Image (tube, rainbow, N blue to C red; front, side, top):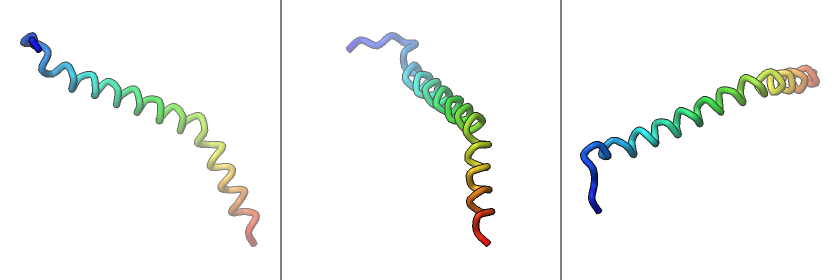
Length: 49
């Protein structure tokens, strides 16, 4: 294979972008679903005497 001089760090940048998008998705899901999960745990704890 022939590599161009600027391609050495390309794979690392792609992996960093993938991790960034995954982190943003996880944070968004936690922000959306977090309060519902917290309310569910609170109701379970309140059910016990």
